[in-house]
Image (spheres, helix red, strand yellow):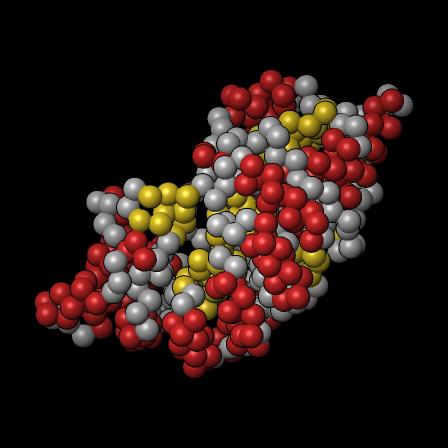
Length: 465
């Protein structure tokens, strides 16, 4: 059974979503080719695709799903009989659309065992002389079965050098590896795409598997590891045991994790362990500092909790990289300006990737936001091409602010401006929209107030979906 696994985009990371199933399929006797179109051309994959019995495309996020939708014509041009499977977080919620464009098997949740079952089913049908392109799916659409994971097989993936790096200072980079210690999430935040699939469940990747995966990436040159868990503290005992073991074996290895505000406060006793074992920063989906909006999102934290987290991080010397959904139906020009002021007061302007100032709320199929009557009244018909429910802000000034901010960020990035310089652009635009131009004196103070950029490491590909 010849299998091609395809990733279109995974946030600049070497895709775990290819490496993990590759190990399972190869153990089952399949010939597997991994293709990461984020760093490889389609031409490199054409030969492998032409002879594949199974072409499985990973959909871990919205951007990857949209990119994948344009592949089917290219795949069918070179292979008219191979079975097409879509798998990953965004596959089940877009099932009808994916089947309409040629997907024959759709797998979500813990997909590795589903891929093995699919490969065996196709092999049996091939031996029997039956068509695999008309084969009806028997594997579950969503599986939350607890799996005993295998160590990911990254042997034919592009070098880590081709992926996002960690910038410590201008011109000083660290090579970055990527792994996952868990999947899913215990929480039910309304805007989160994990919820329709996992519905409050999370599943761990066994400690020995995680450690060996990191060990192999370190052998290939990784000096820093990104843990891609939706929330590293869904299982804090599991997480802390892993980073303690890694630090004992690789005392110079650094890493970053993602943890929600609620867990940072609930498990604050573990934050010192993160700092001691080499955690450089924690990505935290703050989303908003408006308590009314946070309640709509069902985030289970408040503005005051976020401020308290920032204080704790300063005390112990950890860096927080907050992320936001700044443009939502409830955003006002005033609340946008308020957010910028809070970031200045907390000295976090260097910690926020510029794109975060222009993130607009995405409402996909099956989003829990659709439980809110106000949201249902606001959205238009589902946009199949863009895989989301479109919405307009009731105040046209806010949509204009979004366009202006996005343009300013893009201009600043084209000029290779640093985060503080881009923040000043955004600050100017927001204050002009709110109450007139900001004083030159304040802009100068803002540019001078933060620590040098080298003191706050960041990944060269921002974290967002």
